[in-house]
Amino acid sequence: MRDGLQSGGKWGTVAAACGTRVAGLLPPSHPGSVLVDRGTLTFRGTFEHSLDAKHRLTVPAKFRAALAGTIVLAASPEANANAPRSIAIWPSESYDRYTDQAIADLNPLSPKARELERFFFNYSHDTELDSAFRVMIPPHLLGYAGLDREVVVTGSGRSLEVWDRAAYQTYSEDVLLRIPDIAASFADTA
Image (tube, rainbow, N blue to C red; front, side, top):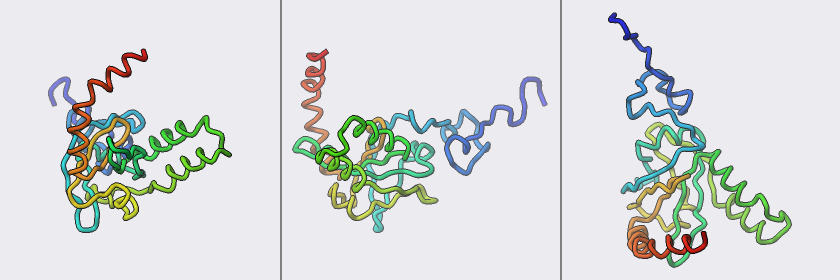
């Protein structure tokens, strides 16, 4: 062996951080060997996918390691004329932090607080990716978001979102027209 080279010396333990079954098999420079802190990963990008006949979605490859283990499928709370309904895919710990933060300062006896809690927990579902990196979307969440076969998976920072493809196209065109006004409205309050 030449000086400075060690067989396996730079290989990392991927599975310990990602929960996958490929511990130590990929070098750190390999795209599949990114060590992930599931609490700080930023989900980015837009991907066109199709649900199979059993309503399973294949998760984009770049997010599989971050979504190893328990994940939460949850109804997105934004549902109005400007944002159609979608389903979010969260690492379990991130969803717990999100919901804890949302309800932390609410009076637990308030009817509105109870409705918000019910929404978060009645319209969410704990699951895992199968061996083919798919997740089955339950019927009540399919109906909530109006999902059929053709979907778009988008990164939304702390989670992925699954949208009906046609609904997302309409939403995306609208938000791109409105984003200068949206950004300016935040600048006015600073």
